[in-house]
Image 1: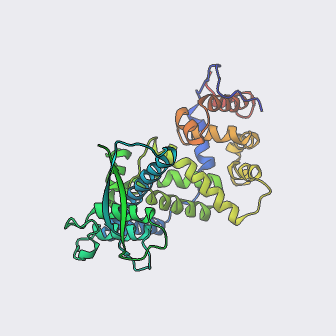
Image 2: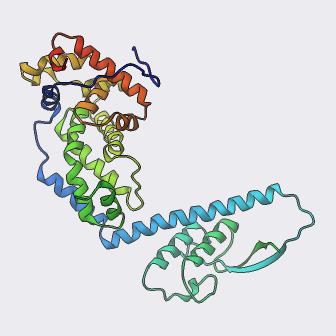
Image 3: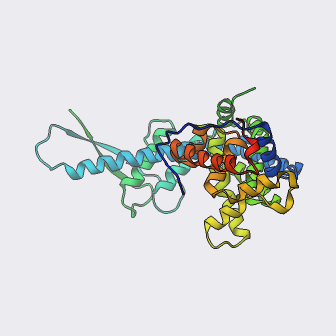
Length: 173
Length: 177
């Protein structure tokens, strides 16, 4: 094929008669219009997906995925820094933060699914389960989700529910 | 009338009416495009539904960075080829693309059959660009973005297609001197 990609320097004359587009329209236009039931199917699906109940779940899923991905990225970054830094004299002091790793979904261990479930719970209006106040600040909110996500990635898979886990956080001085 | 961008922002907030407006705005174009790719009404209607299901799945958080037709063209093309490949067996993609974009000569009247005959022998990629420009009324930049090819390639394909039509006695009258 005589194709000159990237550098086409010749003058491109796009002038055509109106009959050209009209005849193309006739040649390539379907003979039948869209049946009303197709409109109904598409719009029913849209109204269902955009209903308040479904929409809340979709928004939550959208937010949760980004939140957990960000938490995982931070942890991986922090972990990679630890691998590249040699131990030695340091000006940092260690601060031990106690995190209660809560088995939210009752699966027998704390994993990323617990963070998902807690995120859904946080978005709901009913926040009465005090044991899910993971960081113990009296509120059940996104900070608790972050804690569970952090713990899920940080802890070994064998960690049991409700086990107290000490997570070390470096704090610069 | 709201712009596509404004409607998308509304759908991102869960507005079903805004989605319906988008549907009404693009359903005919998508159906025509799908019919062009599949050559079959039922397949084209399936493509129409699948395309809007795909679009619906992009919300919330959908960010339109190009024109709507530029975004939708490759989606419709991909879904059409997928649906078509499920219903028919082709030896390769080129054979399939050639068949689905060439007009069916036996179904058109004689006044346009000469144009159809010339279009049918154009290379697939030239015919596709020609139709995007003069049937879909897409800009050259939008065509380049939709096909993910350089603007120079779009111009080259269009130039070669038009040159062929200008030089053919059956289609040269379409062009203004």
